[in-house]
Length: 307
Image 1 (tube, one colour):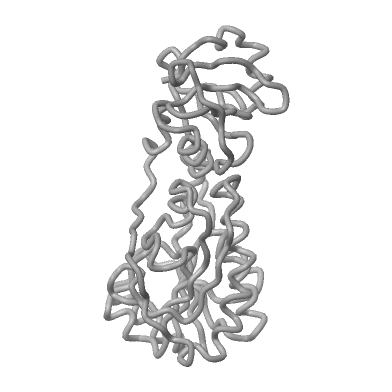
Image 2 (image 1 turned 90 degrees about the vertical axis):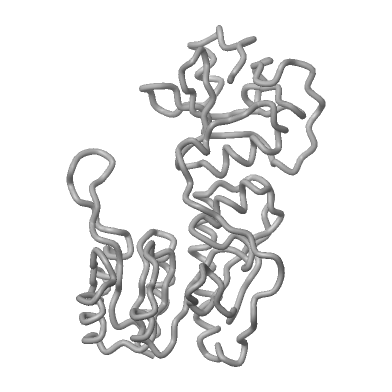
């Protein structure tokens, strides 16, 4: 098996190392270097950085059209392994390979598409997982070769859950490659789909239950970050206390009201069903801080209504 490993972000680095350690990776396909958040300096994708450290050839085409297909054909690869690469593979590109695999961080057919980790958290799922599947023309519709479950406790953020997937992916994929055809199975059950996460997805609606707001804050961290309006100005909420699966006392105040500061829990906010405790905030043009430190310089927030 001579693998072309198509991947971009941090989540795919550990699997690259594991495949390389087995002598299976011939080349890496990844996104072009892109400008960083501060300035115009081009930043290489994490997978490129690791590949160059390991001495693996890297290819970064803008598109996967004829020139890219010619380059890949010359590499002598026979297998495509994709893990959060970021581009769609057309039939002509897929025809270059004897075998194709995709690592998808959900229990397919749940959360097909580009944001499965975000969707699992925001949907208040009690479990998610990783699926190794064949690449099909439909979005994440291919046959399944292997999968594993990840239990969720209602405290995960996108950042922490991505890290868990990153570490678990090699343990799923490497053993599965030994008998993938023997374990092939069709997807069963009702599928669900995810789309691109937008900045507007972080806007909090305090008429919703505390559990839903809790999930939104965690799903939106570290990006795009959940926020509410305080006197018409966005206040980003980056941390929340406890588990979304815990029961909350009934709230009597108007949803969005900052009721009080509670030691060990943060700022207590009334919602449409129960109270939400926020532990970290990011005020405009300031650094992230814990909510009680923010309160020390902004006592007027008590009794205010977040919108």
